[in-house]
Length: 219
Image (spheres, rainbow, N blue to C red):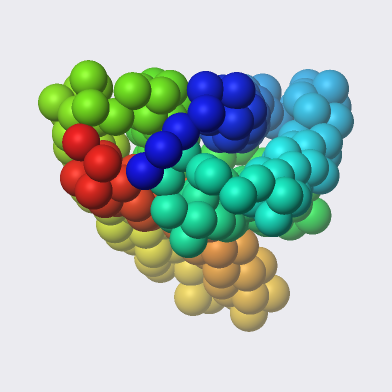
């Protein structure tokens, strides 16, 4: 496939901008939960995430419609834009649940899961940058994709450990109906938060899988 460097640069710049925004958002999400009693500024940062990434992905799709020659298949470019947008929506959903539910101090496993997620999005950022030269960076891309898969697997492990500890911590609260209800409600809230955070890790792995497929086709 023929390429024009200016066109390639514009697409890759938007990809990299989206990946960097997602990484910053996850860092802010982790910091906000670590400092849940004093983090209004970070909540403001998170509030700008979704429209910011939507602007970037919208620009990618607009450019796709205006460009005859693209750096790789159009459906792959659209898939990347949609993948970035899906991750942003899930991060936004996790942040909203934390704010609306007023869940308090997060469990230790959730913070560990968020640390894994910071590493995941940091690696995804490097992976997107490596796309600028698919032929030269094929081995690097494969290594980065494998790293993201390992982070996803570690995230799965922390997710199940966290839920197990969450359920176990509520054992024995069956003497007061009102307390039982409050405890059950707390478990349900944290379960939803865990689900959202782990979904982010899986969506990152899906974007990494798509990039690997692009590398295989064009390397």
